[in-house]
Length: 349
View 1 (tube, rainbow, N blue to C red):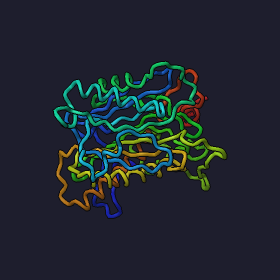
View 2: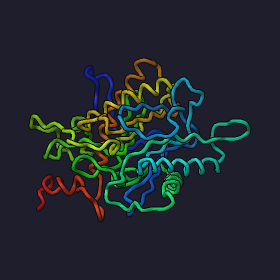
View 3: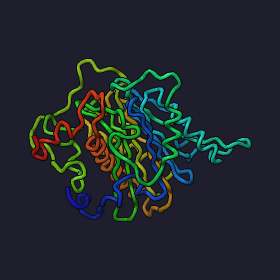
View 4: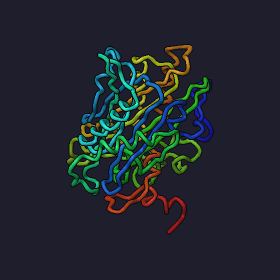
C-alpha cells in the first residue's frame, strides 16, 4: 500500500509522520537503554508534562506495575512516564529507576505534601534468549534511569531498548514504531516490544502478516503472502508466560481516560493483524494508550473511532518494523529477519 491509507469511502486519509515514529506525536519523548551481554533492555516513553493514559490487556500471562491506577473510574488520570522492559518480573524494577528520576525533577501526583511519580510498566520475557542472567543486584533500575535520561524525539528500532532480547516464532524480535497523520491533522503513533509466541511472517516466505498496511517499503516491500494456508501454529508444549507483545499507542488528541481505554482496546487489532497466533494464554499482550490533549476532537464518537482504527494499523506496522530492523549479536539463539530472508530478498548469496 503506497502513499497513504483511506477508509472504504476514501474520505479519511492517513500518511506517516515525518519520522514515522511515535514521537511524531508532539511532546512525546522515547529513550532506550540496553545491556547486550544481558540481551535485555528497557524503553521509556515520557513527556515534559503529565499525559492521559489507559491500558488494555488481552494476553493470558501479563506482567505489569501500576496498571490498576489507569482504570477510568480511578482518581489518577495522568502519568509521568510509561515503561516497556525486558527481564520478565525482574524488569518491573526498571520503573523504579524512572520514578527516581521523576522524583528528582519534582514530578508526580501531589499527595500529602509529596509528589509521587506515576510510572506504569509492562514487561516481556527474555530470560531464555542466551544472554547473561547471573546478575546479583538487579540491573533494571539502572536501565530504567538510563532510558529516561536518553529520552528524545528520535530513537533506535530493532535490537534496542525493550526489544534487545526479544524473540518471535523462528526469528529475533525487536522494538518497533510507526506513525500516522490523519486527514484531520491528528497524529497517532505506536511503540512496541515484539516478543510473541506467534510468528510475524507467513511461513518461509519472509512476507509479513502486516504487509497490507505497509508504507513506502518500511519493512522490505515484499507485499502480502500469495500462498494460501500459511497459518501460524501454537507449539505443542508452549511454556506459560514466556512471550509477550507490549505496546504503547499515542495521539495528540484530547482523549478522556475512558476514550483512551477504547483506543487501547481497538489497537489490539493491530497485534492480531501482525502476529499469528496472537493473544494466546502464554502471551502477556498489553497495549497502553497515551494522549497529550493538544488537539481537540470535533466529533467525539467518530473521532475516537478513527483514532482507534489508526492506532491498530499503526501498531501492525510497528510490529513488522521492529522485527525487520533487528540486528545480529553474539550468542543469539535465533536469526534476524535479514539473516534468514534478506539474502533471498536482495538476490545475494
